[in-house]
Length: 459
Length: 98
Image (cartoon, rainbow over all chains, first blue to last red; front, side):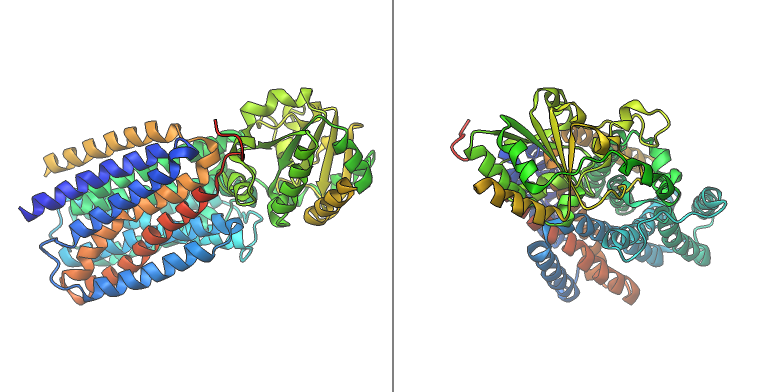
């Protein structure tokens, strides 16, 4: 009877999770959706506390109190610019939790495990371990603790693949001889190592794909835990998480015109090391403008599209930007924001940053929705974006980003680019947009420039 | 045993399919909350950790369970809270009720 009630709680929780995700299809219903999912979680946890194997609660309470305190503190104090770091950290916690449950199950049943359970434990521990270290690496790269430049060496791909094959081989062998403790722990160590090595060659520009991919691994690790414990809600939630991560990786890869394998094995961004020699040539026909010039262009426009990039987030310019947009709006200038899918360091990051600065979400437009409008727009304001507005992606087949969907900024009557310097972006590629005759470059820190622009417009 | 595996696979495949269908409807606008939300949901591995931490199978399992409970709780509590904090910020234009 007790088991039956727990299963009913799990079933209800699964339904609530799916309804919760369904709510995320619109910003109107999203908050309620999140609440439904949280209620599902509460139900599942309370149900589990009645599990017949649980005989004492002291360690459960200790773990939950510590975890809640850390989790709540992170949720309250993490700035929105640090969302990618937070997500990377939570993937690593998820991976670690899965790996540890796997180790605990193996330790408890070693030797007497059937083929199915052994395979599931193997995948759970391997995926959990590599998600743990891989996410920590991603965190380090995002935080600047580890170089964002891809680290490459000879035979990198073949050695990574060999390590993975060895780990899978160990799992395969242990199906027949489950009592091989040493091999099991060797596989755990290999999992940790593979996580580090997989993320090492991946450049800063590819972070959105990596984070999505690790999201997917974390989900699969949770699903494997479900197979180990014969627990359906773990299988369902893991599958949901895995599907979501996979889908986001595909969307991100497409937005960069890269294949999955290319991201994982391609070490994109390493071009940056060879590119600086050529960048000098692009500075030739630069048309530099003053704050007043830019203010005049914006003031005389009827419609303005703002293209924010990661540079905006770095200089925390979103509030100054919104102030500028409000000012233009009060002068009856239509203002829209064009958001490229890979603007920012993780999927959807830019939208969150702008929403935090009180920009209404119906002013935020997707690449596909706004690309037709540039040719009808008087002025475009590019704030700290580079590769996503590079026309070379359409025109120059030799460019490393050729084929990547970009915003058709160059079609607007006038383009104002706020940028720190002529330095190329993450991918280290020259941008011909910056030397176009209708482009005006305003150099300097985005936040300071925007604040001055606001002052100039107020006059 | 093969039955159990097959049953699990059924659930996995169908759930992944439902997940795919539901998640394709999430607009790019909400991709960050989606990721932190699914992250909170995958903190469900907590239910596995709870049993390991509370069952007194042996000391090793209890210690590993305790660490796992802590990690998973961080994801569950932090994940739902920060998702809500983000979603609260998404607003329509004032005076534009449609």
